[in-house]
Image (tube, each protein chain N blue to C red):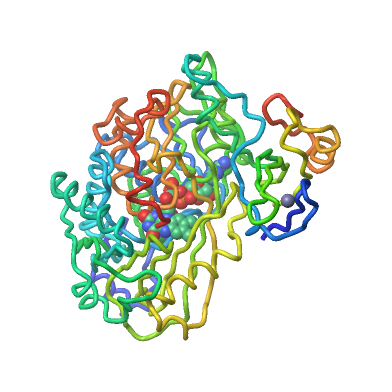
Length: 414
Length: 109
Ligand SMILES: Cc1cc2nc3c(=O)[nH]c(=O)nc-3n(C[C@H](O)[C@H](O)[C@H](O)COP(=O)(O)OP(=O)(O)OC[C@H]3O[C@@H](n4cnc5c(N)ncnc54)[C@H](O)[C@@H]3O)c2cc1C
Ligand SMILES: [Zn+2]
């Protein structure tokens, strides 16, 4: 792998950019790998990366039915934050956020991490109390957040309307080191680093069956032939239920479409991420100038990757009260992704009923922010059989009634 | 956007008039049941790519519950039937088989 640097850009400029190499290889599948990861989204690729980097396991293949990063990783609104309520969540999300801080350097790939600050608006008395509680919890967890007044919100976000008739802004939970990153770059950066370690990233390789012998995984069936493995990591977000079905177990997960939209690009007007959970909308401005807007999930499980049309209206209607200027904007694009939602809105990082199969899913509407931390923990779980970051997120928590309830703190999609 | 016809009152409306209420035909287990049974009933979802049986309520209309068979990939509605039904009626199963030969959902097919 050739190092990317300012010097490399200058060198290539002098020779008409003929010297850039492909960022990752596209090899033919081997007969067998030590570890197969299904799903080349951010979580799958990060898992492979940390398996190699932290545990020296490099005989690894990442299998992707489409193109890498083409799932939710390339469809999300890229919000990064770690202001969760429960301790296990704070641990893994904050680990993740802190890894994002240096990820561009670690991967030698500019993932455009932009800790521009993030405000979750409190628009009802309940929310004020809820966020005060979260701010106190975060203080105990060592996550830096603060509850700020409405006046301070207005200072940070001048385009906001504080006294909307239905949902006035009463304050906000502020995380100064929250922000955004370039979603594709996160997938591409990890893929390039994995490829450099000799791992195989096999695109257009769909897993259609999982082979087992005596309760243990032996490999997978794909459209590019049978491939053997000692350990299998299932990291396929909305398709987790489908893969679990192939392995003969069920998950406490339902898959549903979540959508987002962007406006036409305009001049910089908001250098902060703002989430309005009561009205189910959130917004940030991309480096290109588009207002990036996220909405709600569909009201019923489905795999359509587009989302119900009326949610666009609901989301935009709510945002217009709080940001009157967006009423004048045209919508540029709308799209959807299939998210995997658990009952307690927390992820699953776990062993499964089949020996050798591990599953990483349930990130639902908010797993982009968790990619580095989840990969870090899940790699440890796959390599060593347990991991402090993942242990609380096992499938057994549903049997035990030991939920990690984030449906209050994270009630909305992001 | 789904356009649904309520089998209880016969009104046709768009999906915002209705509300999905989760998987249908659950076998319920209460206090004192085995952990496995309770867990399966409460948490383990079918979540299929294909035919799904689910409870819906006409909440901005007659307010009644009914059961619907819907395809989670194409969003085709295979049919609706009364909430008091223990198993999907044969004509619904046939409608699904016509589109998805060899489908399975719990013990029904
Ligand atoms: C509209 C929208 C907005 C969002 N906004 C945010 C946000 O602001 N902040 C945030 O933190 N999170 C957000 N999320 C959630 C976030 O996108 C996801 O939690 C995260 O990207 C999941 O990553 P992943 O790697 O697990 O899944 P994915 O990126 O979906 O990757 C899974 C991969 O598995 C592949 N796959 C599936 N089945 C098979 C098979 N049989 N064989 C081989 N490969 C298979 C898929 O093709 C896919 O590429 C949003 C999601 C959506 C849809
Ligand atoms: Zn009705």
